[in-house]
Amino acid sequence: MKQLHFQQKYPISVAEIAKSETSYTNVAEMAEYFRQKIDATDKVAFIGTFDHHAHTNSFAGEIASDIVAATNVIFCFGHAIPNPQVLAVRPRSIGIADLGDHFVVSYMDAPMKPANDAMQAWTLALRNKA
Image (cartoon, rainbow, N blue to C red):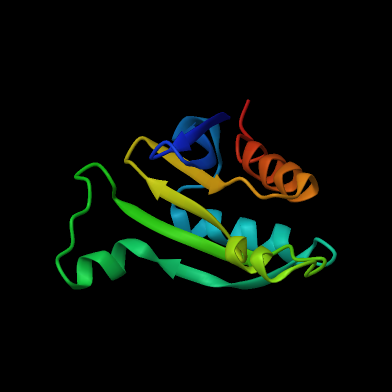
């Protein structure tokens, strides 16, 4: 996984997964995989999925030509609300993009190490072919 700053300010983690490295064949299957991981994790709530590609396409918005599909899985790790500002970084979202021969899975890093550890483990486990 790569850690970088999107637009020089948003800390994100990104994994590029070749289709030959995974048994998942499309973003819907990957979204369901993440939903199962979320549902199996204590104190984490699945909120929904968002077909970002369909949304952007619905008003003829710009989509990079190599992006075949793009979905966000939305969920919350919130174990506490220590102050009102924490709401600005919740809920979490994992983006899944299909670029034809590979997937790009990305998420904004959370201000909570256990959340980052879980999202990283879930993402790296997508590489399930030897």
